[in-house]
Image (cartoon, rainbow, N blue to C red; front, side, top):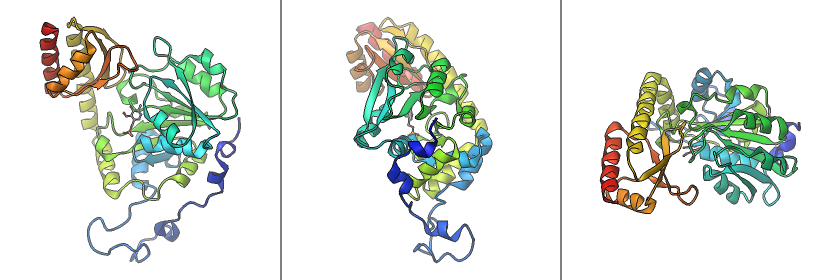
Length: 345
Ligand SMILES: Cc1ncc(COP(=O)(O)O)c(C=O)c1O
């Protein structure tokens, strides 16, 4: 196994990151005349560039040392940073397993990184036989595994993730955006065993603050330090740091909402099962259901006409729509609308 710095791009290793006024004063308190801020107002000060209070909270919650946490402007920012740190544009490659979350492809195109896109098997699992052809490619720098996967909704077999961790010498990024909705164990504890493992999580899904834009990476300090090097100096606003801490402090509300969503998912599934236009409902470890319909185009457009917006996934998975679990009222409106369509189509 190479060490992490051997995997990183040389320009990232050699660069001098921006040093903010507060970096240089080393956290001392006093009269701040060092950052050209306005002395008046409530939000006049630059935020903590390292989000120490928020990381402390996350550290307690996840039982991970703060030095092993990176906070990004959503996981989207972290995906981009991981590619940027480890992949030389026009030379290196990333691998992921489709259909999956679209940002892995977008970030690759943006960073001029070649994609090895391995289709999931028919039961939406990782095809390890296919991986074997590429796993020793020196230019393959990052493998991204999304579990539970968006848009298929299922968890990946841990045996296959372990195979990649044990046999691939680059960075293994496990995106656990939906981890709170499943009983499957998080890979977060394994960062202590695998120096090349990065876990992505987010406050956008089960924690309910997608508007605040907070994603987390959990990894060994070598990786976190590289992410800190390339991030924009004040990537998380003071207001967003505060909102994230407030959300994390409301853990009973988090649990309550999560159990409502999971209960509603069950109800939604059994109501959908009764409709003849529904031809398949895939298993889901997330807060959404992937549903196959007959007349999928008509179902999709007629739902929109009724003001109900779901995500059309038919270009990736035959005749399917991805339906996020809403409030009990929203789900009832959806079911009533689908019932009417069912009677007319
Ligand atoms: C698998 C997966 N990862 C990451 C994200 C984005 O998370 P964030 O809102 O933290 O950028 C999503 C959003 O849909 C997702 O489905």
